[in-house]
Image (cartoon, rainbow, N blue to C red; front, side, top):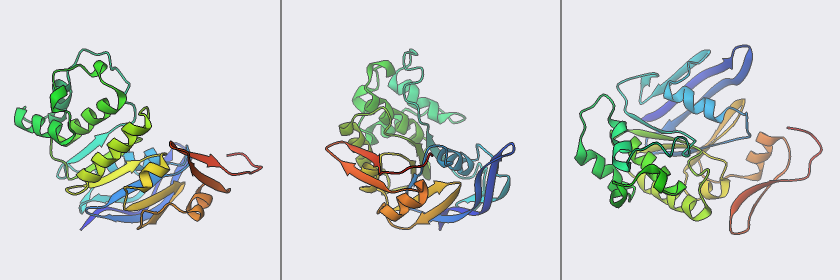
Length: 244
């Protein structure tokens, strides 16, 4: 079954086009990495698939249901894990917020925390946790309602390199039971775990394999791009003489 199916979809903010004539599909059980330059439309694409934005034209379906749909359970982890971290809320209370509209279920909350290896932290406040630990709690909050598909926007931002690798290993394990979609700029870490790639820069080129090639990067950025890792994954643009 198709987890995501997008046909002839375009989107504009007012008179400013952001995505143009996007068509691609993602199979159930995939682990899709969405990559592209800043301002290219990555987060906008994710919000459109989630139903948080409405396409200007075209169609989007999740598991054959037109978006937005209340018939498909979806998990979403937004980008900023440092927002309101001093708010006096415990890990357990944070995860329970994922059950909005549903009866509070401690068994489900504990199971979600166990899946992300954070059950022993359930009584701690969010402000006491590291960036990587907070991200795991937010993943647990998205898992508590048993989603069929999980979306994450830049999940490894504000996390050190060890935390990034641990997080993506967690996502790799979760992918055994659900479809995952991740927006990320951490290309070296991402490429070790995903199954397919969507390159986004006004349009979308879907590649049903995990390798992020030089040709893919050059087509997105319009210039040579070198991928280099010296212990810490990062991206370095090659020599070029035009602006982005």
